[in-house]
Image (cartoon, rainbow, N blue to C red; front, side, top):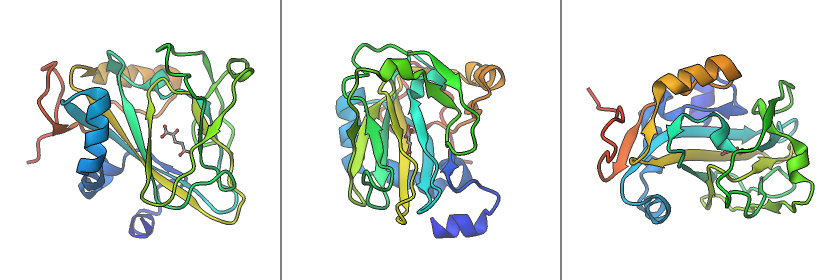
Length: 221
Ligand SMILES: O=C(O)CCC(=O)C(=O)O
């Protein structure tokens, strides 16, 4: 990670949303059998990893992650994805660990978000807070090397970090190959919603085969 920051000072260390596209060696962690076994239990045997992000909250001035659902801006149809979030540092309530609203994914519904362009947040899409009024968030406390898994419909976020201790984590996004990663839709969403353009992400088949037969799977060389 330090090498990455040193070799690419142009990247935003708070949030790097395309690690594998920067350096394919980041795919290694995404293919770890212990992780894929968990993902397979949720998504089935045919799996693509299509996203890889580093969320690194600095020890002081680490930005908040607004409450959101990921699916709001992901061009996957049918929308099915899980994220595996791997702790690099201890993640605790003090340094802004991930927080989730338990059960918020159960209805498979996307709630209304608004654009939040403030400088002190890592993502610019935020859930309307009225959705959260009767909810009790749960902290996802992890030691380095542990991982949590959240569904694409799960409402989650994180507090800012001013604890004096960095909170870095890697997020890998997986989808079942029964779904289609629609690059045209991704480009349109980026244009219309002003979200990160993920339309050109590499799709790496990490288990099974491409069931829908239309996914533009990455081929080396
Ligand atoms: O690590 C964070 O603060 C946010 C992570 C997140 O939103 C995600 O992985 O979907």
